[in-house]
Length: 401
Image (cartoon, rainbow, N blue to C red; front, side, top):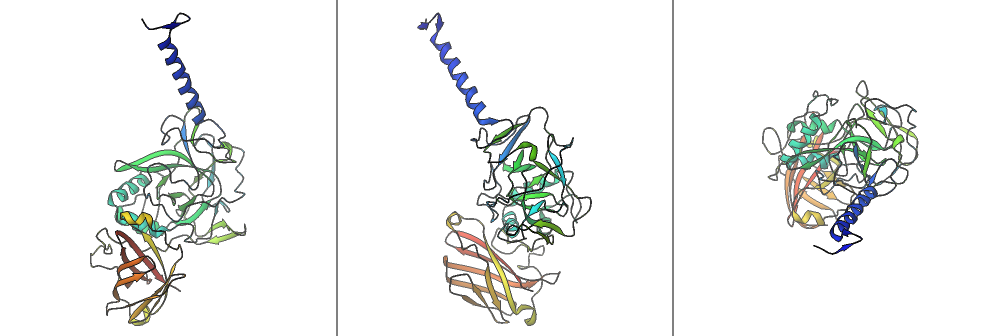
């Protein structure tokens, strides 16, 4: 028989102490009500009534794009709309706000807030994640866009083109979807105000810029609500909102300017082009190499604004970039690329407006292959694949004006 103390086996006392410690730790890590800063108890909220708190700068568990998007969401706007004193029956304890409400979102439609092209490029070269991404959206019965109420993987570019880069001005309830074992991994979440998101034409958040995760309408929780994760100062459950789809497509968003606080109009949509393929070419339905037709001399000539987004390769994790757009000047026979603070690079154009460059740049020795094309909607675009070291990046641009 083991030694005892006070007539009780020491083994039983040890077990009781361990159980008490575990219960105490869970109590510290699980927050019910207001949370002002706690550690994550579980990687994702899955239990009854559990809602995962996601700070604006946190990618969260099982992100689609581990490298993250430009939309880090580190800006936390002041103010926000004032929720009505009543709550809806649809999402327990959360105020429902129509997606077209003036001042609901912040931002000025700047690429520095969120880079939709990076999302398109990433999904274009990760077919498994693209399949899961649209599956998560299609599971939401409130989804609607010009193509219907479902999105196919070959429609991702067209769908993202309808989304608008904005910033949440209120802590917002959503169903977030991570990527786990090749499938969407849905969980209930509150996104902190200041989070950069892509919003559809009904005003509903559809993708989180910091990680590329698809977003869906929140699912009502039964019983007591438990907030799991790292909270933030000012978080109050009664001030959380749920964005309900506007009754009709929004023609103009009225958003709060991040800098001035004034209400400003923002036209819906994002300037995206078809993504490069995983093999390094440019993905097109015909497989001809580049989308659209060869531009005429007058169509080609002019100034362009381009953006580089990192794709795959171990070396990509070390790439920082300038974060600034690239300025391109094109003539019928050449194109000059100029990044802020770097020497310009000039490439010769073939008769079909394509080019190949192999030489030095700000990131070292690079191999750049691409070309200019006119899309069906009349836009003149530039798209290319750039490799440096063991990293592959994708360059896209559009003619100004």
